[in-house]
Length: 302
Image (cartoon, rainbow, N blue to C red; front, side, top):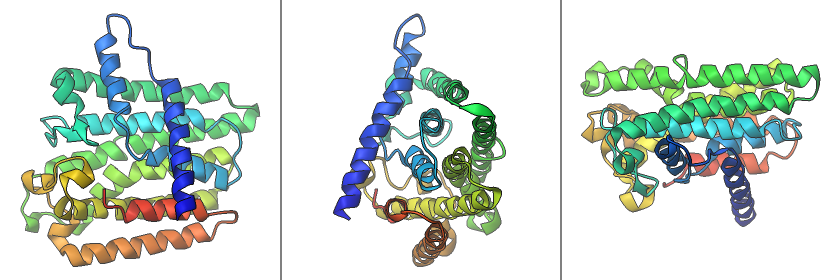
């Protein structure tokens, strides 16, 4: 595990450097929104999504820089979603990753623009991968990857899940069905994790069957990750999480914990993570880092 932590820190440093290459210069009449965008990205975090994308790319035989613009783009999309999530009209949180949220520092209007700016910059960045593609096959892989990224981030993915989540706020326990809750989890949370691993697999040239396995693995990871998030919202602390606990209860949100109880939620996390590991272990190559990464994310305390 010590070796894994060292490798993880090294990957994290490399991803931070990669992100810096794609962040905009803070200049011109739009300087304030650029500052807010960079403040949001530089808030840190696990950088889980680009790390999963890169590791899947490498595991399935990918080489070169083709994956890098997509890694940066996906982290921008994830960050914009957090900026908007924290707004007063949404979760109304003032802390994220241990420091003030973007709207708390720059104001609500500028936070909205910063989120919009990051979403647009994400696709400007991803499209840049076409310049790195070598030959027709890599052009086609890049186009497929861009399509997956757009779909998983949009109304058929993350935004669709967020919509169902917003509409579910304030509903009584009896009004929230498990089917609806799973839809929210599979789209609001799992969709971007699927994008991470699927884009990595596609850019590496994986066949359709392998991409199907990768997508299912990411779906299971996303569900387990979100249920663990629900658990931590009940059992964690501000010091551990870097954000206030109990926000689900504050916003009258129904979660896996409120519907099924803490014990069953913990059991479900174990079951989902076990299924995901079985898929990972079916791949050839060194899956050690990826397995340890997924375990550390699913069973995290922050």
